[in-house]
Image 1 (tube, rainbow, N blue to C red):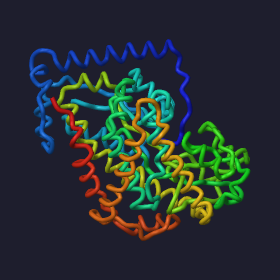
Image 2 (spheres, helix red, strand yellow):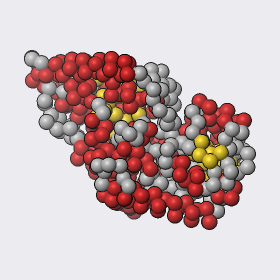
Image 3 (cartoon, one colour):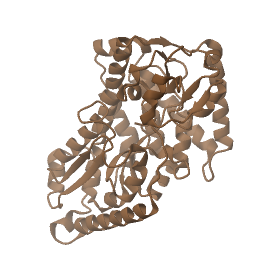
Length: 436
């Protein structure tokens, strides 16, 4: 639920207490994994990539069973929860029940904006979290989010492009991964954007800077603020729980948010228009999927390899359900609510392009301390171009529908995502696979 950023206020006492528990949990796992007998023998046993389910079960036969707490921001059996649920089921099955999950739904232990600390402290073992919401701790992740306008925001190929290219950037940039591990989180999928951010407005539609002028627009992430201000509107920070009533009562005029998030939290009930442009949108946001590092390090090698290899299941459901399932449902619901669809006028579109060029230049020259801004921007642009080419030219995904009609297109077309998932596994996941 990447757009929902708010600061964490965990007390110093709670933090130190839970960090101690995490350390004890990690030590216990490590002792279990590396102790004597069959468990010690198998703790560093490696299983080759592409191994069968039976191979993994045999390698993990001596492992003491472990149950990991996994928190989700959404309810059970929803498109938003699907990637995590499918991943948990696959890991449990392939491990022969040696690795199971206690799933905590709807942020029942901590709010999603506190998941960075919860993972680091051991309050939750594994789950979706928002590194970009704490730029002082995770400056490289925040910088990546600032640049998530880098893609062509069309509904099919463009959605696959932003997801795939930033997944590759997250896996390839050491700055992104090291700041996570330094803060006690082992990254599994460090960057998981699902789309850019269109505007959902209540009242008058906004399709130009002139129409945006003077409006109050809720920023879905810190990166939205400068673009909103450039349009002549006021960027508003509003807690997630107040956004529905804010739109309903006119406290805010619009909210910058992907369809999936607007649909998930019910905003379509109070919106009148989408500004959903196929050439440029406000930035997406780079949530992440990670695990407490002490817990990860304490698992036997074969267990870590299994959890890594089954990320293919997570990615498949991220695309099929989280991205396109929610998109289909959200656009259909928008039509049912009578919401109209707009695009930016040419002058505003060009103004946004100029603004984002300035953002790129600023990232090159004024990146956070210790980050090579020029190299970071170059890697992001290269990944965008490469995965855009892979998606459209090699794998032949294309856009033959507009945003307003994508619900009907998805209902009528079988979108085979396996070729792209396989390519991400070979090009992005395989080089990072745990080894002895």
